[in-house]
Length: 359
Image 1 (spheres, rainbow, N blue to C red):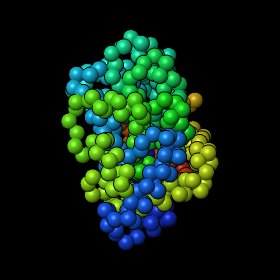
Image 2 (spheres, rainbow, N blue to C red):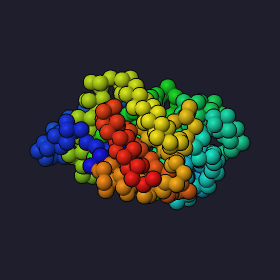
Image 3 (tube, rainbow, N blue to C red):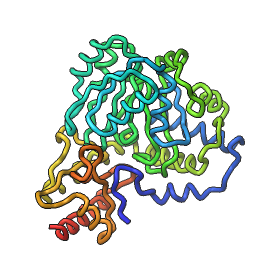
């Protein structure tokens, strides 16, 4: 099977092998060394000196943790959305009783920093600002550095960033850009199995956490930090997934983080160029096209779900469909993690052959 969705992604042999190590005591010195080593490496890749915590959960768990530790029911939250995951982030805040003002942008376009600055100024009581960095439902990478600057120059609100499908593949300077909480998940650019989520926490976020009234237990930052400092977690962690993440960060640092970014950008461009030659069109404005996932509208007469079915059943290629209002209307190709030009070329050839079958 050629798995080319925006996550989970194929496991490199080195990471799969790392998960075959023996089980260890999660309260013992071996796990403590593993946890502290992985945390230190993640902080280097996140480019942060802030606290960094790892939860046994999906990426959504880390986003929930960011919310419940910083807001109280009734707090004003400003959410910027241009896709399905931006919408879900806002819905999550509403679920915890926040008074959410959602600022929407056209799907396929980028969040505009100027509108962010204006909205932040007009909503001076905002407690938290929500941004999705990489919107895989549309294949758009939003200009996070400029968005963060717009927030920081106009507000002291906590900036919470969903970087689930970007961090580790796309340049992010957490501290330099003034990001308070940024979350990612191991099954995306890190090329690990689903099961671990990582979040960094700034002093501004800790200050907000000190007064936040939303109930939390499993996702309590203060409790997790207390246990992390002694090399443990409050509850049983997914130990084998830590082995995988340990191998992943070692591979990323061996390749060099700048080289990792360049590889993702190069392969994404290869996908876009090939897709356009085949008659597809990008959902995203090309200048904001994602380095980790490409969303494509289909040539006239081809149905997205027919193409996905034929690609899977006859050519072993698994690609994603549309989400939200794009459901059934587009296809999405993931190209994140330990993907090479040769692997993506095989995927695109299979897609081309599937196209011939459904035309």
